[in-house]
Structure formats: C-alpha cells, structure tokens
Length: 345
Image (cartoon, rainbow, N blue to C red; front, side):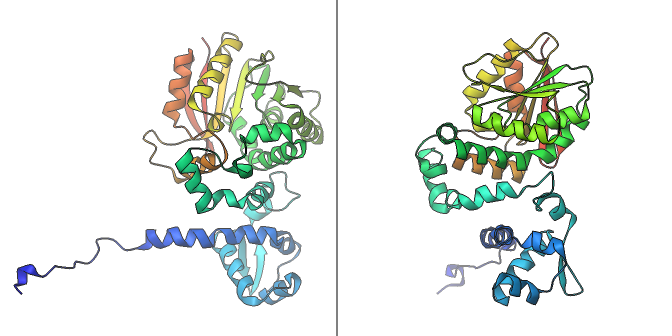
C-alpha cells in the first residue's frame, strides 16, 4: 500500500468540552430542582449543617446527597464552609418562601410538568409545531380558563419570576409624569406593584381574566396598595382597554404568534392618547437570533408551552414602528430582561 493511500487521522482542532457540557447540563442542572423539592434550602437557612446531618434529616444516603450538594454549591446556591453547607445571598433572595422575590413556585411548575422538557416532548413539539404542556390537549391559556385552580397556581408561578424584575425596571423608566399604567395580561400584578412603589403619583390597573385578577388582588392587598392599584376583568383580545397613558406588557408578546402581537400593538396604539407610552418587557434575542443563550433557552420553553416565541429588539421595534409608534428605545433592565419603549405621537 502506498503512503498516499493511508488516510491521515488528524487531532481535532478544538477540545470536546461543549459536547460534554450538553450532557452535564441534562444530568447536572436538575439536581437543584431536587434540592428544592427536598426543601434543602429552607433547612439550611435555619442553620448550616454537615453532609451527614443533612442525610439524617432527609433520610437519604451520603452519595446522592453529596452529589446534589456539590451541584448546589457549584451553581452558587450553597456555600461550603468548615465542612458545613450554608445558604448564599441568592438563595436567601429567591429560594426561601418568606422572601418577597421567591422564585421557587416557578421551579414547582417545572417539577410538576417535567415531561414537557423531555426529549420526547420536545421532539413532538418540533415535529408538530404544537405546545406539549398539560398533555398537549389544548392551548395552555384555554386550559387556565377552564380550570380555576390551575389558573391561580400559574398566576402565582408567574409572580415568582416577576417580582424581582418588577422592582428593577421602574428605577430605569421615568414615569413621573404618567397618571395610569395599564398592565395588559398583568397576571399577579407584580409590575403594577413595582411601578406604584417607585412612583407614588402613579395609578395602575391589572387587566386579566377573573381568576387571575383574584390572585392579583391578594398580592395588591398584601402591599396595601388597593387605593392606587386595581384589577380589571377583561379579554385583551375582545374587550376595550380602560383609559391609561402607559400600556405595559411583560412576558405577553412571547406567548403569541407575531400576527397576534401585531394585533395587540395596533390595539394599544389606537387606545393610548397622544403622547402615551407603550412598554414591552421581555428577554430579547440579539438581532440575528444567535444569542444570548437565555433567549434561546426561553424560546425552547415557549416551543413546549405556547404558540409563541422570543423576539429580538429589532423585531419588536419593527412592530411598534409599523403601528405608528415613534421614539423607540431598547434598554436592558435586570438580569436577562429588557424594556422596549415607544411613544404615540
């Protein structure tokens, strides 16, 4: 055999870490969901404990407990000090039920519906372009409309993801001259609460379905804001909007098709007074939709749960401009979140 006939095997140009990272993510990240399910974080908030002490409380063997603890430390939810595990500031802010920015209810939703993110369900969503949540029986929000308890739980779930950014964006958007903010599809009222706490001259209205508004009223009462924040039961697709000079949408545009988003954009333009403002609060793609990973991951969640998709700031700006809005601005606000703002001439 001639030397030229021998196939040359060259070393790869890059290492294989990205391939392993995909595998490690599948097995590694769910460990913190288990830590949450086992109520590990409230346990360690009471006092730091050793691995052996944790095993005794949970009634589990050392090997699996140590694996979950290691992942929780690696992700910054726990700290290991002098052989004892203790909670970190991020856990105190987001994973203890008494925190006003408690995120754990969203993790409960994922745990209760974990089949939606299985490879089988995601493949079915890709092949059929159909959401798989709640057994893919019908559209998610229709299910909420037919099941009062499901709607209430989902509203509290969204509150757990909303309260932290709701306290952040009002610091970056000047609402000092505004009179009323209408939060369309406002869910728990988190964003109305955040805006009202920052801007004492602002009134706010949560527009949503009846069971959702009941939950919102409970959160509003907890903050003693009933005199400035109220609920309004309505169908955002069919009913007219109450009078307001600011329209706010958070995690609404990503639930629906671009055509339905354009409908809402036009409806807001027609409803707002001259000089009125629209604010769209979302996790945004970059313009060519190649990053950030958070928007890409959220888009996969939407594939499994809704008929919608994540948008880029450019796409939302185009929708706003086509509807007649001007002075369009895109501003990062908190974590992965951004606000797209525009004015009606």
